[in-house]
Length: 409
Image 1 (spheres, rainbow, N blue to C red):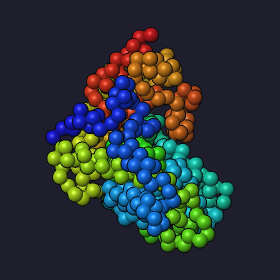
Image 2: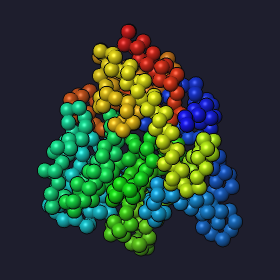
Image 3: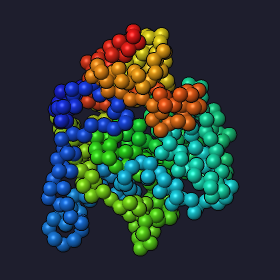
Image 4: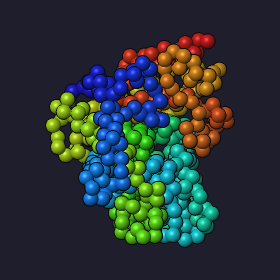
């Protein structure tokens, strides 16, 4: 069975397809179902939720449905899932919530491969006497697995690393790294932002302690998700108002309070996946298993796109591909960062836009990674071309043709 991209694209506003859009790693398009759910909430229930009056009661029901469905999709209990403004704020709040559990001299191991969202909040704890230890990257911008055993010790309290780099697209061995950390008594906090649009989240299966991702990268509104094991969330110190008890897992790590209409709109992600599953004959009522099987269709399609792009990139002498030079699904997701010889990344992005192709440029909040591999001009940074399941082979060809034109100039 192949992914029906024509059907997929019909679920989105059609004006999107005037562009060959390849900055999906920065934020994905949202389908009509998400737009409809948010519109319905704001039209019918834009009141304070949870009171006896009908619209208020329904508002809470719609918000609860969004929260519960997202928990089901990743195989977690609702109380293990915090939905907040962004991944960056979720990581910051989590770091502050865990800080009182540790002592001066305890160590936090932070990968330089991280997006700053899963780096800066942990590094700030150095102000309180904790020791920050860098987990370096290799020359080809991968996790230095050979260095990890010596970096982990009995003082390590937490290891922060990404599931997938938002620069290289390389998939890291989350279960294996997690087991290594657990063997030393350390927790793990995994940034799954660059992974979740391309792979089903199976946090319990991987045995991670904390897993972060963003719904706006997964075809939904601009919100972040924090999964945490219940036992750790109970121990973490509440960061909301004093009258929220420590066992109130739905509120204690969300000091900003919930964004009502956006949480209600999360139901639209589930609606979208339901629609695709039904169209492709995946008649599965279990949301977790349905999501896993649907993502397999995404993976197979995205591998076709990735292989086509890598074939082009590796056949061009003036193109330097950062990260794995393969489109194989077991190695990477279709997020590619490039350096074009003789062309600044900012100029390349501008010229691509003139040809109807949208790509990004810069450091993408992974400055430490780019510095580690010797990229000095962080303002221009790299040229990033990132794909999603709704992209087509024809769009990849338009992308590579545009880049060829830029190289010829």
